Image (tube, rainbow over all chains, first blue to last red):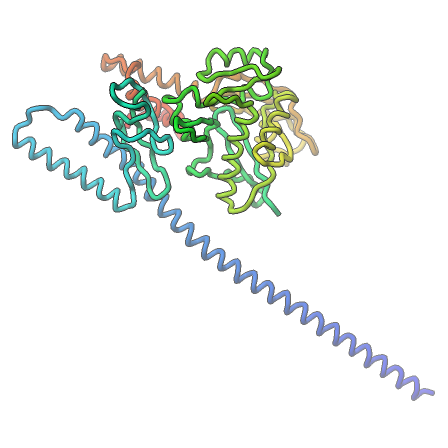
Length: 172
Length: 278
């Protein structure tokens, strides 16, 4: 009787041990899956972070270039303005000196081009509000309406980003 | 979970934000600005433009460049505001049933349709920025907007393809953005100085509601008026010092206008900003 009871107890313990082993195994599998998923997520997050950082680096570089350009553009504007008031009848020496000064402007323009900037707004072009900003509309004989008569300030773009629209006078 | 955008559909400028990490974050538009001019236009070649490009053609194409449409939305034709705008706006404002319509390129549009064009541009720019489709939005309106104006704003959102989850008061949105809802049981005053309007509201922030107790202001006072005062001051100072009147010189005026706006914006950093004509 006692032996029978002992056997039953052992069986129960074996069964209990078996089911607890199964449960442990199940938990281990569950944990493994969770860790695996976590690792996969971390890898994906890391991959996304790398992409984000790379794109942020490009954005920061572009923003810095654009910011510097915004400080440089008024220098070019003032060159343009000064040249509009160039006195007539300059002697040869002064004319040569002026050519030298103009080279400085060309140099500045080259730097802008090297940084990927492109000029906008030319006389005779059709006014396009995507790239030009009109300040005056005036009558002009023999010109169709909406033609740029004068560029007050050159516009600039870099890639598909408009840095500054050209400030223009347009025919009525 | 799809993102819901919050839109401040302003009289002069509009702005869009999302909640990120529990905080509101303003989204830049396609042009890289945090605000979009609430202006819609049709170019002489027939292209519809919204925002900055529309603003740029305002001088050459005033009849087809619509701005301050918020002043007309949900209004009745006989409202004094409509009659006032009819006198001063360069574009045509027409009677449309009991309400109003505006004319652009010989076609009539309701203010809801024009506002929808602004909302469409905002939605498209937000989608491009976030890289996902946006279907739902919350739009803010002035606390003094009546039911008709609120409803018209909602309709504008729906025309733009947005499910308008809620229309909320602008001062309430400002209070929430600043986290005032976390300090219960207080009364706060919100000053909203926009491009063309100035609103002052007293809010009662309680356990689960923000109630507008009172609202007032000036519907024709904003940053643009400040610019005008600064421009006039520069003109008079220049005349005093140099003896030259620049008020008739459109090109000089443009430079002064830019400088005045830059100067006004600098007031947020300095008490005495320096205005420089670049």
